[in-house]
Image (tube, rainbow, N blue to C red):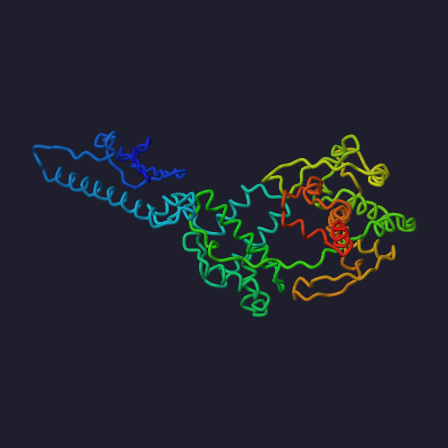
Length: 439
């Protein structure tokens, strides 16, 4: 049964010496507390009865009459508030009662005193407190700049209290058409007013979907931390991202790349070795760049993935095979120096394409154009990147061991991760093995 208790705040107002009446609501696992914004003298509060006690004066002066009227009004307001909370509770499905439900009923979803209600301002707090990796921070800052450009274009300020599903539609339309707006000289001036902004290019479906999911993650955090109570995404789903068939080097192609003679170009030979090492351990390039010799313990690579360090810091341990140890022995340097002689990340991706092309690996693969969504055929050397090394590790392992949870122990994927499907392909050989099990 729903229950409401009232008590006085322990802190007094320094000017009036009055205290705020606090409300606590109980029902099952629901236990929420919020101030009522009703302030009363502590001497007139009956803690046992949880109600105001009106003073009994024999001589009623005009001043005393005024005080008594105000106290009677506060007592009536308190009764009305309790009735409103109970009425709202019985009208609201329990699954819709989030952490800030009581506050919303009492205060109408107004931001707490001293807290900003601006989406952009609160997102700054989110970026600071969420413990994201550096690359994730950069993505959220890109979303923040896009929201600032939207506000400038729409001539309105986005607030948490008034943010609705309609705003989601409007922002998504803006993200999809911003490259068209950029053709207008007036909008170019708008872009210049947002620090760090560049002229927007056309965004594909996956890029927009990613930004909308980031916005949804922000709102879930804002609700959890009491910045707002309404979830505009509750009735507004987000489209799924569309990914093509994952492509990666086969074991034979990887070995062919490693055995190819790059002696005329020692710098490319070094970048080839780093890429093959990455194929052997399956780590993200950001983690690869952070490695030092301290991460190698008894022939095993140990590291905490930066992407999930803020949410679930788990140490991954990847045993190094003979090829990985050979590369390590050839290039590794003492801590605190980076483990390998890295180039910049952009140059690393260019070098990966170059070494695969020079090794004669030009197999055609299907790739989804990120902007148009159309399927295109390209030589694998032209679309290779550092992240293909992670797919190479997962995809080739999956051909040997059909257990994503076992492979996830080496890659950091959680059990049942939906993202895992983007790294491996259930090819014809795998299907043939499954059918042969029935014989």
